[in-house]
Amino acid sequence: MRSVFTAGSQHEQVTFCVDPASGLRAIIAIYSTALGPALGGTRFHPYADEDAALLDALALSRAMAYKAACAGLDLGGGKAVIIGDPRRDKSERLLRAYGRFVSSLGGRYITACDVGTYVEDMDVIARESRWVTGRSPLHGGSGDSGILTAYGVFEGMRACAEHVWGTPSLAGRRVAVAGLGKVGRRLVRRLLSDGAAVVAADVSQAALDRVRAEHPEVELRADPDALVSADVDVYSPCALGGALTAEVVGALRARVVCGGANNQLAEAGVDQLLAAAGVLYAPDFVVNAGGLIQAADEFEGYSHERAQARVSRIFASTLDVLAHAEQTAVTSTVAATQLAERRMAEIGQLRTILVP
Image (cartoon, rainbow, N blue to C red; front, side, top):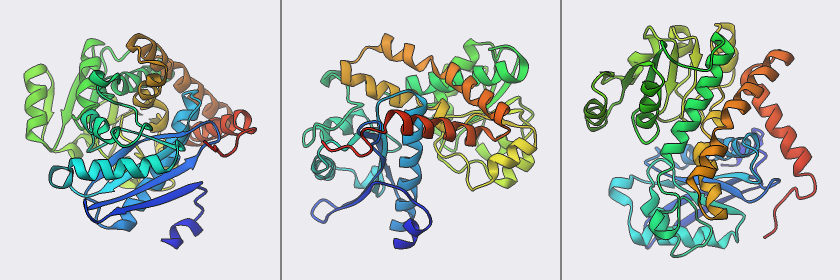
């Protein structure tokens, strides 16, 4: 594991959590608490090995710090991963053991939902820790974060349309949505309401059937990879990360890439390839911040109207990033990172590291 950190990681803290009795193996990564406690979801995934889980936790927690900063939140960035198959390994015993590890960090890390975890899981974890958000409405939480995450991606996409085509609308545009889970399915609904034509894909037949029943006008495919070369205006990756590779850039026909997935760039330099190909890329940690904003709103006693109003600001923050990229002749990813790091340095200079 040591080689991961000599490669340039600047994380404040990484905690390995093991509870043999419940089968728990988890990693909690805190990138920064300069702006406040590190908020980030818990991903439950069958990683190939511990190294893969660690790399994912490091990358996701860094993105969460930038996401919070770009969204104007007084929060830092963290992420947790639980190693295992949630369909087979998830149990009350394991989640409560995990909750005790979260509690042991004393508020430096606050958890929420992510891939493989749901509001019901947060309710279980909260029985052992008060540092939990994204809970069910029954317990005072905001419920499913996919609704406002999709709304934020849609607002970011509208900003991209404004930047490229001069109008903040997807009406008359053809959009490819890859992944029809909690975010992708809601995004489809937003796009159709705005007048876009949608082609969508998912590896899950159940996900396809659900969208077919809700929106029969959507063109559906079983192979998400096929959407890369589809004749569309916008390509929207909404499944797992790493969707954008050099090969994908070479095959893309879309003018804009804007999606809900985290860590979409599979490797360094892909953002430069996108720019060189004339493809406008909306940094994922800017446009998919809706779920984070929703979870953070629970700290004030959740108000859907207030949270939605805050998520709508993603339109303006995306335009700011794209304008900064154009003015400074850097990629949109570099521009967003610069703006996030500037806020973390300026606003967080008196706190640097959170001590609960």
